[in-house]
Length: 346
Image (cartoon, rainbow, N blue to C red; front, side, top):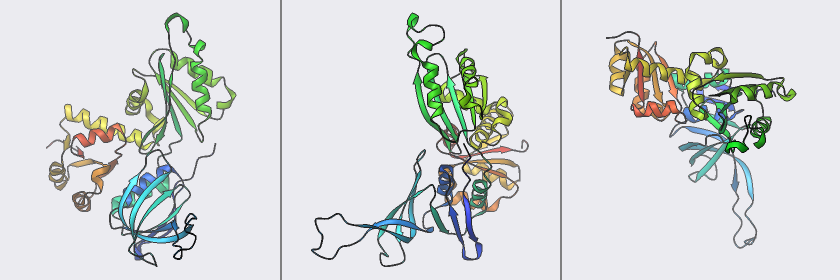
């Protein structure tokens, strides 16, 4: 169960504004999506239909040939929890110049980016390359009625399974063994690849019972398994755990957990200390006075030109891009996509 290596920089030539990347994980695709923008240029390989001579082989399917294309990007779509980043653009060199082409960038692909990266885009790339956020963690959040199994990703929780205990009064029994509840959960866990840690959560006693069964199964001997009581189950219980202090060192290398703690701090300060601000104009105002400690920007706002203007002007402020695919991202968007935590009260 070896960890997959992070994105690799094959070549980085700032003079020519060219970077060649090797995509190694699904998380790399999320980072790439936030680095690429409209009118950026990329070079990559695609399978393109080859034109046939007139009246020849009309009844046969058109042959597809792998070619290298240079595109000017028009749109980038991240397909969460898949192996693909979809890029639509115009071919700007070669015999097909001027035609439109869609490209699916996947794990194990190489892509050349022709772009002068801004400082925060560089930071995102550096974060991906250095693999700051190791995400080979599986959450199991359950009670006596249902269980959610989810993988931790840089950009959110990928739900793998939702298992029902099929609890039915006296027929269920006190342990749930009659329905094979725990066995079904354990079998689902065994089918997950590259996991290094399992975190079991939930109210009641089911999480502790499951923890005991997993610890007694030799299959999990090479993994670190944790067990924590939580007031809620399902995804809500997982998000609550990530925001709490007890997640501590366990999730110190998880991007999503860091985001949850930031949002929790923002909301707490908003309701108590007054150290939280939100809205683009407020951020600009306090940033100019050098009072902002952390800026939280929704992923959808990160590419906004006025965001780039703000980021180019500020120094000494921690900038955090919050994924749109998380509860944290939904909270940020409700505050207009721009939130901040001040160093001290004005």
